[in-house]
Structure formats: structure tokens, C-alpha cells
Length: 430
Length: 118
Image (cartoon, rainbow over all chains, first blue to last red; front, side, top):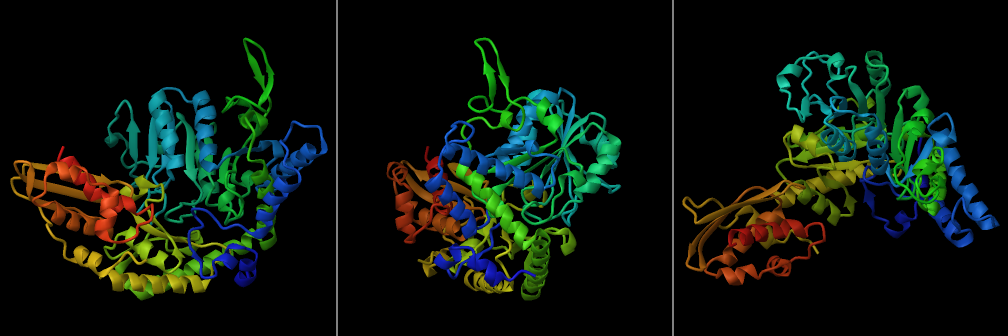
């Protein structure tokens, strides 16, 4: 059980904004004092660069920096710390993969498969890569309840191929026809940032690897790692990406986890400081992963402080967080449906076992911007728009939704305020 | 300050100049794909002046109210005069404070109008 009042006391923002109803943790989470203090500690006590100086301050910074790598590796149960690469955010991790892995392994005629529920950052890099190389870009559809259409006899999915194969050829197929021997990469999200759908990643990976044992599976876990226990070895994925700032940590820090052998085989991403072994006039050699992918001075203070966020999550317990969110989502869905009946449409699974702490909805014909604006006037922070998932909104034939998302500092009181706020919206706009 | 003032809501619920002119001299469609707002404008000119103007489309309260008020304003004014209008004018016309994220909604009808006059 999470005591929300105790949790809130550890987030200074609630002291500064006592009436804050923050329902946008899917965009970015709030930060506990322990994280903010750690950043301050770095800048005030040992703000040296890492891996360079041999003076004590730099050694302290390096030790603290590498300690975060250790804590991340344990948190997701990776094989070793060297499999953890620090980037700027999950978006950069995915672009790194499209560039350093995609350009290495994808050839004309190969297939890259993703899904219609992806965030743009796990969609566009693959779309662009496919079109540059002449690969086939396949997009797995969902059903109206927000579940991936993987095992359905009536699978309907789009294909965008530069050689413009007709869609007809791909109608009514099973997973075997989505994933083929030519599929080099499957890139999909663990939890949808709009629908909240928790995809059965472990089962999907096991199935696709039966069809094609060489397929590389990339999991966007940005909405998963902060909320559910993620064990990379158990999942069987090849790469997983996530962001510090969505899990109580600082902005400017992303994680790329990958299998060591694959990280070794990939091209470097950026060239420059810290990633070099030797440079000659005619050639250069590079460090081993993870440093091969960490060119230039990183966000040192932020990476150092990121471990405090993980320590915080470990202390609360990720399982407790998931249970807490399930309780709120369950409550919120019934309150919203009971209060607004036919005039509210909530997207995504209705079974809370399959849904993260995310509720995206449409209220009457009111424009999501107007809904969000009226809520904002009462200190309620929600997101309106397509949430960087335009193909998904197009799939539902709507331009935008309102999204309320929940985390450890939210409780039923916040849900009640949301309900009251929406009543006000109806009153003002009707 | 609450941006949902009575006058704004009145224009939203009862928009002026809503619809399409049958045989316009010019027409234009602009949209903001981010929020799905769409505005179509049709116009009849009398030499250099706007004789008749209508708008249609969907959008939030702000973009609809802005289109309603702007089309009122534009009638009988010259192209040159209307081309000079900017976002500051729109804010003044609406009489409300708009944050950086909402200003785009308010300016969308102006973008449509100015494309129409090119």
C-alpha cells in the first residue's frame, strides 16, 4: 500500500503548488527531493568531468556516474553494467538504434515491423530508414479495444513499401505472415502512451523468435519501466529503451539496454570525445560498449542523480506502484463512466490487468484543447493533442484526445477533482 | 484570467459569417494537424476590398471565436490593411490573455485570411 500523503511530502513541488493536480506523468513525472538534492550535490561538491581527471573530484564524479550504471543494470536485471548505454532520452535511444543497428543490418527488401500504437519516436525512425534503404515497412494494426491484432484471423495491417506492393496480398493473415524470415527488426512498445495497453511482450517475443530466430526485437519501455517490473532477461528482448524523466529522475538522461554482442557489432552513433580508442590521420578505433555510444560530455549531474530516482522506486516497490495505479485507474474509469455515461469515450482496454495508469478520452464533441484549458484553470494538468501518436489517432479517426495519467503521488482525490473539472467543462461549453 | 469569456463563448455558440459562399472569388483551407483544427474561408472581393467573407470548419472555442470576429472585422476593409494584421491584433481583438500554446489556435483564422488575399 502506498501512502500518497507521505509520498507527496517528498516532492517539493507540492509545497510550492499545494493545489496541484498533476495528471501528466506520462509526459514527464515530478521529481522527489532526494533527486534534486543529488544534482545539487554534484554541482556544489564535485562538479568535474568524468573519465578524465585523475584528481579526487573527477574520480568521485566518475564513481558516482558509474554507480548509476550499476543500479540501472540491477533494476532491469541486465547481464552486466556494460550493456547499459546512457543517451539523452528514449527518443535518442531509438534513433541510435535506427542509425547504428539499422544501417548495419537492413538491406533492400528486408522487413521492419512496428505497430500502429507507437509513439512517433518508435515509428518515424523506422519509416525513414525503410524508405532510405528500400526495406518493407510493416505496421501491425490494433482492434477497437486497443489490443494488437497479432493472433486474430482477421488481421488487418498496413504496409508501406517503396515498391508499392498492394495491400490485398497481405489480408487475412496470421502472425507467421507478419513476421517472416525477411523481418530483421520488430520495434514495439511495451505500454501504449495513449491507450495504456500493456502488450504481452514476453509472449510476443517468444512467438516471433519461433518464426524467425534471428529477428531483433526492440522494446520501447518508456511507459513500462516507471510502472511495472521489467526484467530484460526474462522478456527475451534484444534492446530496451526508456527515459529517466518519466521515472522520477532528471531530464536529459535516457537508457539504451542491449545485448552485449549486438552492441559490439553496431556502428558507433556519434564520434568525438570519450568514445575513441586511438585516432590516426587515416583511421580511428573505438572503445567497447557502452562508451562507444557515449560521445561527448554527458549529462553528468543528471545521470548521477538518476540513481536516486531508482532507489526511490525500489524503496516504494515497483509492484506496489503497479497495484496503486490499478486501483486508481479502476476507480477513475468507473467514476468517469458513471458520471458522464454516453458522453465520454475512453480509449484502450477496459480490463485493468491490461492497462497502465493512462486514461485517454473524448468528452462530447468538445475540443480536447478546450477541455484541457478549462481543467488547467483549476490547477488540473492533463495533456491534449495526439500525444506524439498521430497514426494511432488517425486509426480511430479522431484528431486528438485528452489524456489523464497517474503515478505514485496521485490518489482518488485527484480523480474526483478531474470529474468536477469535467462537469465544469460541460457547463461552460454546452 | 479566464479565456472563456461570455463574448468568446457567444461567438463560439453563435458564430458570425459561418458557411460557404457559393461562387467565391477565392477560397482557402488551412489546418493545424497538431490539434485537428480546420478552417476554410471563401471570399468575394469588390476591387481591393472584401465585400463578403465566410468561414467553415471545426476547431476549439478559441479558433472558432477568432474566425467569427475576424471575418466581421474584415468586411469592407482593404487587402493592404488586412495583410498588415498580426498576432498582437488578434489578441487585442479577442481581449483575452492566451498562453504560448494556445496562440496558434487564435491565429489560424488570420493565416487563412492572409492566404486568401495573396
